[in-house]
Length: 443
Image (cartoon, rainbow, N blue to C red):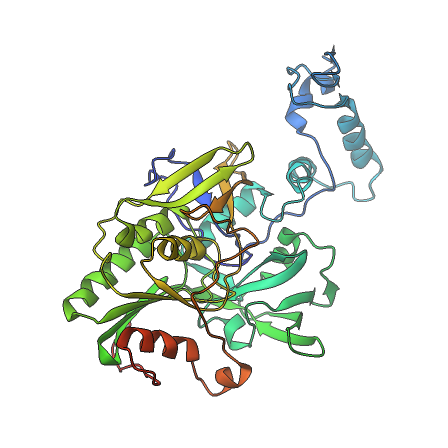
C-alpha cells in the first residue's frame, strides 16, 4: 500500500511494553520501490559449507521432518520434506554461468533469493527489503517523500486504492478509495505482487504515472494520469467549527501523531466544545503504539486492541494516556479508506460506547506487520498476527460498520458537499442542518 502512516522512531521504546525494535506496522507503504522478488529461493548463508566443500547430510525420523543435505546447519524440526541445499548452489552457478548478462552482481542474486523466501508466503504485506530499499523505506517515514500520495493494497485478490492522502497528486487527480487498479503504465496488474506495483507507482517528482482504474458504479475503466510530486504529510489538523464543535482530522498514525493530537486537545478543550468530531476518513493507518495511545484518551486504561497469533495466543494492548476525553461527546467519521490503525481506534471506541461512528464501512485491514532490521542494513517485514477489537470482533477483511451509515455521491464531491460531516455536526448539536466551517486557523 502507499501511505506515510508507518512512522515510529526505531530507537524509542515501545509504549506498549514490547521490545524497542519490535515495531508493529499496520499498513504498507507504496511510496518506496520494493526490490523485485525471485520466484523462490533459499537462504544462501546456510549453504556456505556446501560451497566450501564441507557438506553433510542430516537424516531424521520422517514423522519429525525431512532430510536436510549439503549444509552444516542443524535440521529445523519443522522441516516437512527433504531439502537439498546443493540445488540452491546449482541454480546460483547456472545463473552465473549461463545468463546472458555476465555482469549481474552477486548481491542481486543473494537479495533476490531472500526476497523469494518471503514472497513464497503469498502475503502481500510481507516483504524483504534489501539495504538500499530499507534505507529508502526509513527515509520515507520522515513524513516527506516523492510519489503520488496514495495507499494501495489487495482486497479479494484485487489491487485497490485504500486511500489517497489529502492534498496529494493522487487526490487532486481524482483517485478515490476503493478504485480498482487494473493497469500501471499499461502493464496489467492481475499477476502483480504488491511490492512490484509499488515500484511502478513510485517515481521522481515531475514524472507521470498512468493508472487504469475501475470504479464501482461506472460502466468502463478509465486512465488516470498522475504527476508525481514531493509529498509533505501533516498527520493532525484541528479547528473549531461553528456551533462550538471541535474537529480533529487525523490523516495517519505517524510518529508525531500522538504529540500533535495531544496539542490539539489542549487547545480545543479550553474552548468548551459541545462535542468532538474525529475525522479518520481516508486514513490508511500507521503504528499500533500510536493508535493505542490516542485511544487511551477515552478508554481509561482498558484494552484497546488484541493481537491474535497463528497459534491462538492473544496479546491485549492497553492505552496509558490520561483519559481526558472519556466524557466528551465524540463522533468518528470513517469510510472505505479508513484502515488498520484507524480501525483500531474506531473499533475500541465503538465497543466501549465512547463514540458514534458515522460514514461507510471501513477497509478491513486487520493484520499485524513486524519490521525487523537485519545486520547488513536490509530488513524483513512479516505478517505475524491479526487484530481484534476489545470485544473480540475481527477487523481483517471484515472492517468496522458505522453506527450511522451516510454515503457521499459523486454529485456531492462535485458540489463540494460533505453529508457525512453534516451528519456528525447534527449529532453533536442536535440540529439537522448543514454546518460550514468557521474561518479558523488550521494547525
